[in-house]
Image (tube, rainbow, N blue to C red):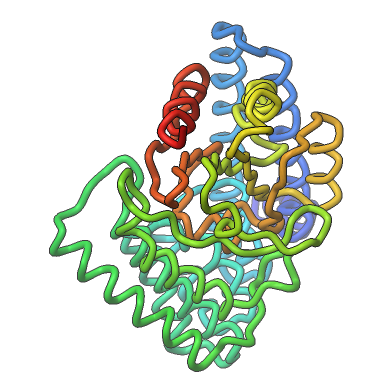
Length: 360
């Protein structure tokens, strides 16, 4: 019996190969699911069926990977499995998996794991991992990445999606987040992120997060719209402030965002109808390569200016405006005051006409 079990164990591919196989199969599932949703269009029955099939397979991959990691906790590839679980698979770690992660706290790959869990504010297991790495990892780069993620976790806990916290608790969490982001700027500003965007540093991201906190009091109807500065899709300087005196509609969009692209025909109508008046549309492209952003704008005749905010869905402009979903729309009057937020369709047209009438 022992020999049979040994032979079966030896016949299994290495853990790294099994994780790579699951990674590839899950990526294929994500791609096919996206294609199914696009093909389904507005058919609710097809969308529901696609979601149910996808979730069953998704959870199956999570269970398989969980079991593999737990069966080989000492294998160096186990950490790659945890990175896949918390990243592409968007899974939490149970107590057993958490202990495996903590045993690897000194590994350089932990910076990637910290970035994967930085959205899980208020979840003790995620906070425990990031704290341990920030305090003990021998790599300055990884420690810096973990400190940044400690700030991000505090911010996420202060503004939980679909939930609320008391003002006192929020202020406390924001103060802690500011402390971590300032520590990043003071000690680790030059450290790169573990993301694919090789040009991004955690110092730049921390500065954007601090700007987000500074802007929050004004990101509401009646607040003065914070300045936006950057470059357009052609690399030319572009600033929101240059359009003071005009009614401005700012739309955060990406080619990957179905609702964003569904808005484009109406945006085009709005632009063409009012372009000779004191009015402008300003896009903020997020999450696309520059090439893809340009092609999408050209193919869809998006002739109005768009800022380019980088390949990360949470680029510096999106972060400074606390963008939580796409599209996000701000309608700003000629004095630079936010008058409407997330208005669309006929209501957006009426909002623009109301503000233009005020000018007349």
